[in-house]
Image 1 (cartoon, one colour):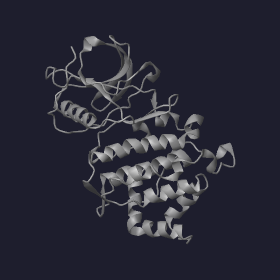
Image 2 (cartoon, one colour):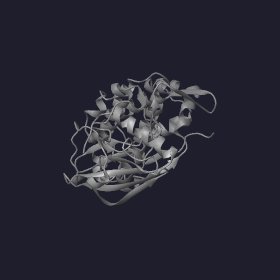
Image 3 (cartoon, rainbow, N blue to C red):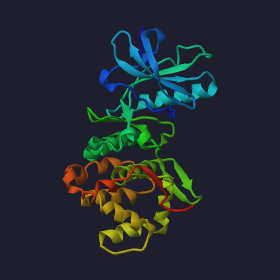
Image 4 (cartoon, rainbow, N blue to C red):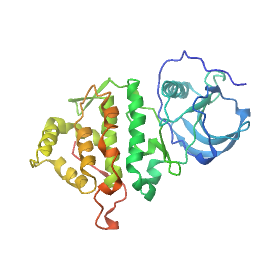
Amino acid sequence: MARKYPKHLALFFLSTSVIVGAADESVIDTGKVVEYYDEEDYVNLGSIGSGMFGGVSKVREKKTGKIYALKTFLPGLEGYVHATKEINALKRLNHKNIVKMIANNIENRRKDKDVHIVLECMPCDLNDVLNNPKTKENIREILHQILEGVAHIHSKKLAHRDIKPENILIDLKKLSVKICDFGKCREGRREGFFFGELPIDGYCKDISRIVDLMGYFYLGVSFSDWDCLGLFSIDGVDVFVEAQKKSVTLDRSFKAFCREMEGVISKNGMDLFLQLVSAERTGGCTTVAEALKHPFFTEGREQDPRPKRESDVQEPKRRRLCSG
């Protein structure tokens, strides 16, 4: 029996496994009230992933035939706390570009039993299709949807803090993108310190991950230490960005990376990239929403320079922009 989910739990968050499955079998009612999970209402179709606190399975709802992802948290205080965080994060976030929660059993379960959360199901994550031709043809649309999801998170004064290809679900057939895995999510204004000296808040953390994604899309690279880019704000990244706009050449480590980007992205794309790189280190809760209006998203792929040879397109790899 479905019952409305009460609104009295505190806000917490959880990092989850990628929620994937057969999305073409799944139809989600975005206005659906979150229900209590009853195992008898679903048929388990097998495991599709695992994580620190449990696993993820694909399930079919008996009543509707719809396909969902079922997250199972193992018994114990730690699993319960993390499940509570996940549930409350998804309750607070309601957007087409954020994975939706369908049901859970956090309050109608015995304390020694697993916690279950039923979630929207998608075919794969972005990491699985980075080199798919359709992905490359639709970089602007995919990036725009990611920004829309992040802008919604920031509008709630929250920050995801772990935006990466593995945490972005995608249906290439429908060109639908959804952000998942909120384990590092917290109040956006809370600051952290990197290398003991650089203050940076959650909003800036998300923005730096979006820049990271642009590197993924256009250069086929990911930065194992992207946070260290923040050091360039001390060492001259803001000066570099201003100098770049004035066509002044600077001998900086960041210069080489920008030169690579200029070879594969349009002028508007490079402008967006530099705007995001030089975003405010704190208090930028509207930066992503403003970026959605950038002309980069209204131009075509033909504006981007093409690689000289097909072999120039690299497989995703790790790169360090600085030492530390």
